[in-house]
Amino acid sequence: MDLGLTDTVVWITGASGGIGRALAETFAAEGARLALHGHRSFDALEAWLEEQPWRDRALAVRADVRRADEMAAAAAAIRDHFGRIDVTVANAGVWPPGDLRVDEMPEARLRDTIEVNLLGTLFTARAFFASLAASGPRADGRGAALAMIGSTAGRFGERGHVDYAAAKAALRGALLTLKNEIVALDPYGRVNLVEPGWTVTHMARPALQQPGKIRHIVKTTALNQLARAKDVARVVVGLCSPVQSRHVTGEVVTVSGGMEGRTLWTDAEIDEERVRRRLDSD
Image (tube, rainbow, N blue to C red; front, side, top):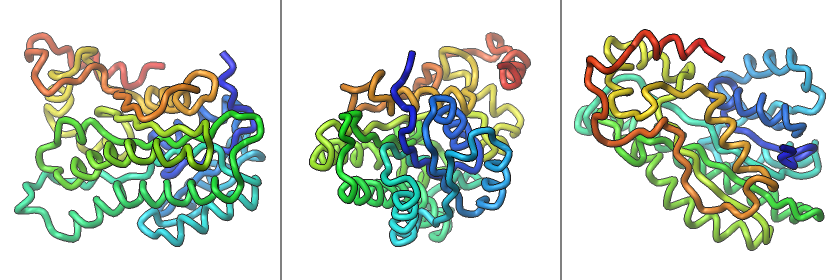
C-alpha cells in the first residue's frame, strides 16, 4: 500500500537511536523528507545520517526539548530548509535508571524527567503548530499529523518510576486537547498517541539486563514477547499516513503485545530463551 507520505516533511525528535532511529528508517522507506532532531547524541546522529542512502533528503537539527526557544528555532530552521513541516513525531524522552519510591526520588530527577517527557513533548507540539500556522495547510489536503510517544507506564503505572509514569500519563490529556486545536490550523489535521510497552532499545536495555526482568515483564503480556523499535515505528507511520489513517484522530494506540495490569503467565509457562531469541530475529 502507498501510504501517501512521499515528499512529506517529517520532523522526528529523539532520532539518535532506538525508536527514533527506527522511525527515521521507516518514514524514509515511504519516501518522506526527514528532519531528525538530536541533543546529547547529536554528533552520533549526524554520523549515522551520513551513512544512509536517503541522506540527501534529510536534515539534522540540534535542540534541547526542555527549551521552548530552542524547539521553536529548530522548527524555523526546518521550515527554512524544506518550506514546511507536515508531520511531527514527539518521540524524545528519558528513562532514569534506578527504581526509587517517590519519597526517595531526588527533586532534580523528578523535575528533569517531567521536563523532558512532558514539557519536551508540549514544546515540540507548540513549535509544530506555530510552523503550521505560518505555512498553512497543504493544498492537496493530505492533512498535518502529530504523533506523541507515550508509554504503558502512563496507563498501568511503573513502580519506582513515578516521574516517568506521571509525565506519560499527562500526554492523554494533551492528546484530547491538541486534536481539537490542530483543526483550527488545518481542517484535516490529526493528533494521536502511541503507547509502547517494554521495547528493546538502548534506553531500555540496562533495565532488561536485570536478572528476571524479562520474565517479570512477559508474565503480563499475551504475546509473551518484547517489542522491537520497528514494531512501534510501523504503527506510528501508519497513524501519520493520510491514506491509512485519514479519519483517525484523538486515539491512543497501545503497542505492547496485549499487556495487562495482571499476571498472565506462570514461571513454568515462560520460555525466556525463546523470548531472547526473538530479540535477534527479523
